[in-house]
Amino acid sequence: MLVDSHCHLNFPDFKDDLDDVMRRADLNGIKTMLTVNTRLSESLTIRKIADTYPHVFCTVGVHPHDAKDYADDALLGKIKELSKHPKVVGLGETGLDYYYNNSDSKDQIHCFDIHLIAAKQLDLPIVVHTRDADTDTIDCLDRTPGTKGVFHCFSGGLDMARAGLDRGYYISFSGIITFKKADELREVVKFVPLDRILVETDSPFLAPIPHRGKRNEPAFTLHTAEIVAELKGIPLTDIAKQTTDNFFTLFNRATRPA
Ligand SMILES: [Zn+2]
Ligand SMILES: [Zn+2]
Image (cartoon, rainbow, N blue to C red; front, side, top):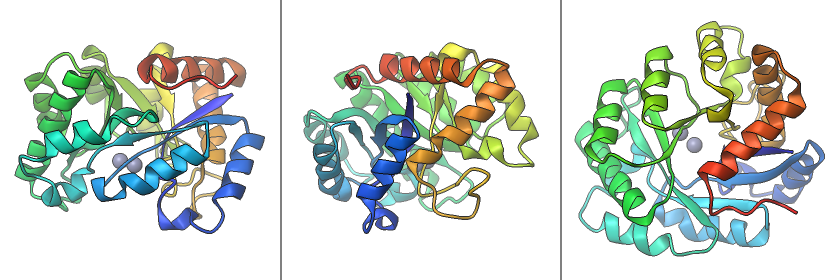
């Protein structure tokens, strides 16, 4: 079995055919999914999906793009309240995105700090989105030491991967590693130890080859796992088992399917 450790099943792209999407995921061996929150205003919709499908878990958090709408003192209390739901197994996605800068960096940093404090207080893993913001991301992690989590949809270099690993973080690879121009990133896959790797789709975005340009969906986790297996030179079944074990070690409130 495989776990899609990061998808957005509440996005409008899935509103007409979510049952079919789930069926295709199942047929391809994806037996657990984590649907990740980007705005607190969507947490009800996300919970509903997690309540409908037993093997779907969810998070609570604010994407760095949306930090401007949540950068106030109420955020910590809201996150804590929403995290009480039994299908919530982590916080995020939060972090810093200086590539798009859709929110002011001050607001992004404030929101990220609040998520890290909440993660520590609640003992929940945190899903980190980081792009073109290596130094500030690590500074935030070091301001609240002792958190655990994952750098999702990793697209950084070896130094950033090492910085995350040194702090106990996992590294999650998406369909980007299947892209022709991703040689540098494939070197990072080779570098990250097997017991710290997760796989994800980040669907509906970033469909892997051979589906590039189309809507992405959890079933396509398989293509990413295949490339990881190839790069590591071990059978796909081993990668599947290891990344699944890693997921349930990190997100230890999620229950394994029977
Ligand atoms: Zn992200
Ligand atoms: Zn995402």
